[in-house]
View 1 (cartoon, rainbow, N blue to C red):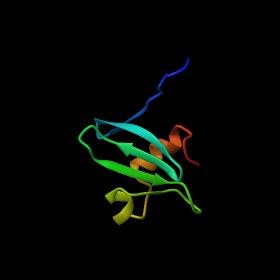
View 2: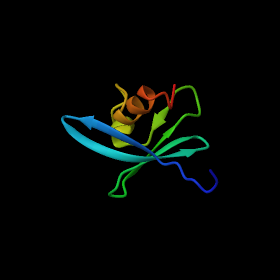
View 3: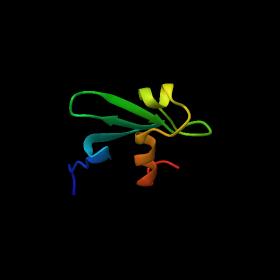
View 4: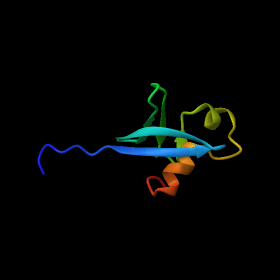
Length: 77
């Protein structure tokens, strides 16, 4: 089908609250975009994936929800 566009969306539920993201594939990973304009990047280059969100930046003792969700859907290792 020529001219078709595929959009990939992700829903993350935490504490009973759903947050929706539109996903865009980047050469170095994924961009997650919320409807309010907030964006995060999950980079897959290097030994382990890393996320640009505040939780991943400042709380390095556990994996952020963005990486967990992408991993659960097989989009990152």
